[in-house]
Image (tube, rainbow over all chains, first blue to last red; front, top):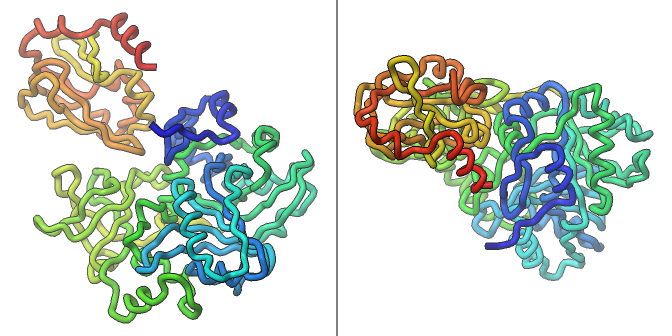
Length: 367
Length: 122
């Protein structure tokens, strides 16, 4: 068996009572107290996540932005400095290699943040696309610790730890700043929960100082550590994509409803097949649905019409905050309308569901 | 109370037997959000699927500890499946059953044997 990797905070998680499981080659806490409880702590107060398993790839050089524009579907050249975009990174067929965040530091420096499970695959793919671009590509994942502080109290808590006015960081923007504990970090107003909050990148040499500092600073606000279980349910309620579930090598950004995250006006890997798909019409579409009676749709269950398989469930659970039996899945494009009834094969039992508006959960916060 | 290696328990409560999952099992499943069992008087043989418990993350079957006939489902679980988390070995019982062959109970572990079995799993 392959050796499991640990983030620099592994011992801290164990001390704090984290229930450790293996995830994508990493030993990570799946929950500390309970997924439902942690989920709602983030919706109502604040939660701290160790997401150091995420991958970071640095593109440095005169062509960094040009290369990023070629590599990913969204536009990096249109970003302001210190702005971030979410983007699919496509293969030559228009399918998704991964989804990522692109941080634009300057015209010659871009950082790509990719999924833990895909870091090696992504880095190889990124390097293979380099061609004649004048850019140096480095996988800096192991040197970076990444924490996410999410929830309505996130800013209040983090502000105690820095003199930099965090209210100046707008949604999907970032700053390089110093904390009072002398840790230099990249701080972005981004996240994977549907709440306001920050993602913080800093040297993996000093993980405990930052983690414990935030836990201490947020005591009165009720901050608590959050495991991967709630990370998944939080992103699910907010209909944020999970690679391997909603996105795969065979799914295009259009299928997944990510038209807003691609820029078809510029050239990028996978653009041609996506343009063709757009012209010919989509075959399938990602929808959200609510079960018409108590039954839990799960990743991989079939969506059926009689005995015929017409689609599949990508994610589903009893949503911890909304307390509803919800799922996401792909259906034929002409069946995607809200209010349509679809049938899910739940371990041999056929249960009806209604297509509903997504995201299931949407909070108004600073943008 | 007797236990299986698949973490079900069976115990006599008054005149009937009840079946549930152990406290160890519930703590490993975390938040239980749905429970089901076809309590329709059918016979279920030892080791066969007796029903399904679902946590936020996954669905897990549980199995008949011995040959039984299922009489009733614990109605509390329909609205409050988290009762299994709170009281797995008492109020969080899942089905009431009729035991077909009491002799089979001797094949199961008692509490101290089960504890010892758990210590081999960590």
